[in-house]
Image (cartoon, rainbow, N blue to C red; front, side, top):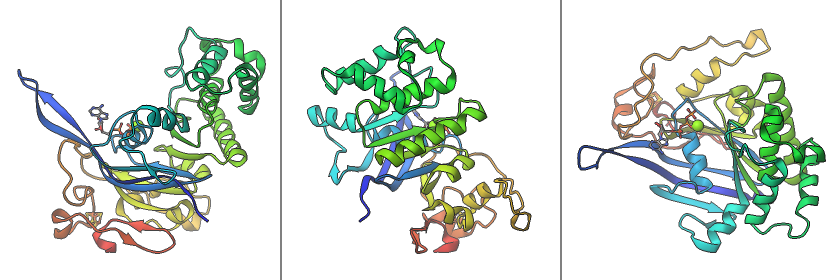
Length: 321
Ligand SMILES: Nc1ncnc2c1ncn2[C@@H]1O[C@H](COP(=O)(O)OP(=O)(O)OP(=O)(O)O)[C@@H](O)[C@H]1O
Ligand code: SF4
Ligand SMILES: [Mg+2]
């Protein structure tokens, strides 16, 4: 049976823009607009889209670093959108987030050991055997006990990200948001960190939401993928299907830039015309209308419906409705 660990339903996040002498709300940044998706147990769900499309905001909402404007977050079958107090503390242990820049997420004055022990203490985990568990975690992420005594500046970029991953694992989470987890690393190190994440998932059935704009990473690691444009999900499918058979004009343009090994399958690269979207305008119809070569009148009037193409492939485009 397929178990959904996290499900988000009709999630929106509108950040108020404050201005004027009276510091009143003069508008909104419409960062996330009606996003619905789920992540299953032991699955990596990729979230792709250009800069500013709302990917990080979705991740931050799920781990409750920020509240949604509307919509629901379901975790293990329970609505946790408005949880507070002890229930919130409990939830915060079960979900973790790993950011792009490991150096920025570490305290430069703390050794790896102090950083790991501190998190375990906050969540009252592994009482009395914190050090043993820290040693075990280091091994799990491909490092050794000796690294526990290092400061962040004494580690390489790849090692720092391994420590950040170890810190996330120290509280035994079920679900981890990985926000561009390898973007700050050298290409050679990127693959090692991705392999580590894959291996950890195989052993411990973690569920990942992998946020990236790098389609090669998506292809390598994610089972299903959702494409976002201007805070709206426009297409979702099992990753292989999405690469083979993209249906939304934006996804088709994204995929056209991915090199394929078979020259007979080579697609012509599509250069998107027009300006990147402006997030301070409310999304009321197709978010891609200003850059779409196939735009029709209806695209400017109404949001395309969710079209189910079968085999878990869904798209939002009037051409496919
Ligand atoms: N705290 C905030 N206050 C106001 N606007 C915000 C805030 N956080 C994000 N935004 C805006 O919301 C939109 C979506 O931002 P977000 O960081 O989620 O995008 P992203 O897809 O992760 O982009 P990138 O690929 O560059 O990381 C952007 O226009 C951004 O400027
Ligand atoms: S709904 Fe219309 S504008 Fe939007 S992607 Fe489809 S064809 Fe293009
Ligand atoms: Mg981001």
